Length: 165
Image 1 (spheres, helix red, strand yellow):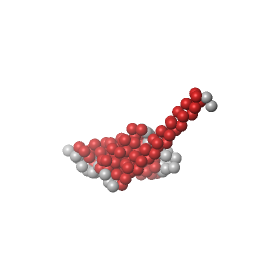
Image 2 (tube, rainbow, N blue to C red; image 1 turned 90 degrees about the vertical axis):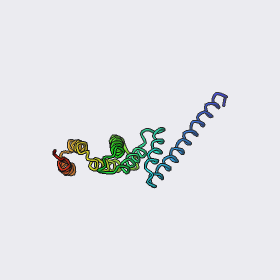
Image 3 (cartoon, rainbow, N blue to C red; image 1 turned 120 degrees about the vertical axis):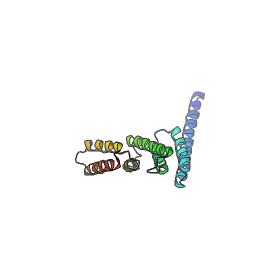
Image 4 (cartoon, helix red, strand yellow; image 1 turned 45 degrees about the vertical axis):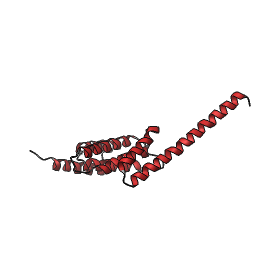
């Protein structure tokens, strides 16, 4: 093996080692973030998951946990600006997730994300957004009874929430 070939092999090995170390670090970061979430330290958990996204911006699990973290911080019915911001950020994360593909080993996660998304929209009285979501589903599957039932419930909730002056 000549010197050029040896240099190429060493370079490839270094790149492979760095990639493996990066995966190990990413998993360690995910574990720390998840532990913080499980301890209900949602703001710290969100920050930790956001650090994971710096290296892998399309990480499904990180976005999912960030969405859940913001949803957990939100207090339904509150007019506090922080709560409104938590609801806005959770909504944005769930909407992003609904455009992404979940990990192959967790195919039901998208359905779970959709259910949390609609629950958040309902809790934060974002009825128009929830209606739009179900109208889109109904357009794709006109006979979907669940979508029709949810639309009826959402229109009812929207009317009930509207308080004329």
